[in-house]
Image (cartoon, rainbow, N blue to C red; front, side, top):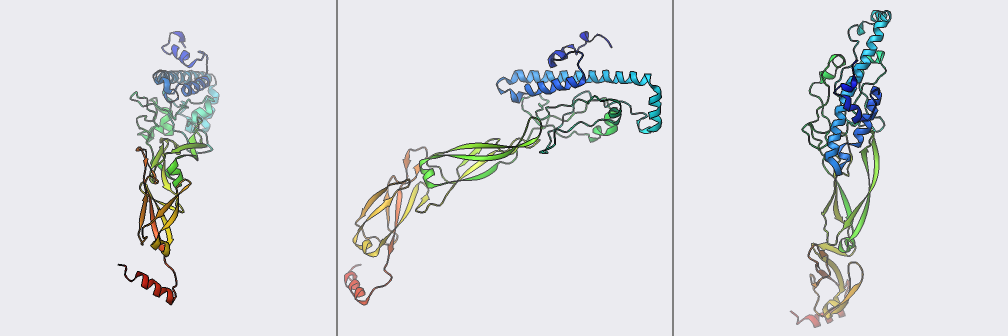
Length: 371
């Protein structure tokens, strides 16, 4: 067969770390291990070196897989020459194999995208009828198909797209063709629309700030190509003064699917209804109800504050429907300004449900001259 030490492929054995006597199965195992180790996406701190090694590993795998397959074919041919009676009997019994006794000829690995099944492993390559009858050696395939590299030489991982000529993958064509069969690597993996979720917060949390822990469950693709469920805790730091509609984005935390990048998750702040306060921009509104007599004669009102505590407010004015009192600096924090809005007290006057004739006369005599 010639001196392998003088062959241009002699250095490929060193790249894959195997002996020259290694079988095709050994070549596949070495390729599987090294391509996982040196993929650029798994070596972000040294991407240039990883890219170079990744390319050389693929070149070595192509060359050696072709060479080992040719050696297997030669061995099979010698065996068939020595046993012509058996071959003749097979030809007589099965005309389908009379002129298709060659194994599938593939000069480069077939890149196959990862499976979408939760239980099925990576798809296996299709074997020709001839090879299933004549040889037990598997046809090599790219294991690390989830991380192809663009043909332009860039470092952005992509997912293989559908080949332009489906007929090239047909049963007969794949057995007879000697041209490389591979999927296009030029398609860029697209990112699906982000997933939006509401994050409810109380006014106290938006006033004082807090840390929210959100547990998510998402689908992820394992190194073996299976889709598995993963759980993760996301930490969201709520800053004082955040308003309804504020959005927090977590990139790539959505479900992962073959052929696409993981989606982003966007949390949108939503305010829970408060039993006392209502937010209007940076201000807070609080309704206060007083009896009619206090509205006319003055009163002292205890005012609760958001987050705890209270202040006492004395009012000497006559309180009428729609009367407001403003307490500065007791509203919501203003983001990036270091100050707070105001607390607006809106008064409601409680009128008596009934008055006697005598009370009516007294009210009339008292208020008759008031304008």
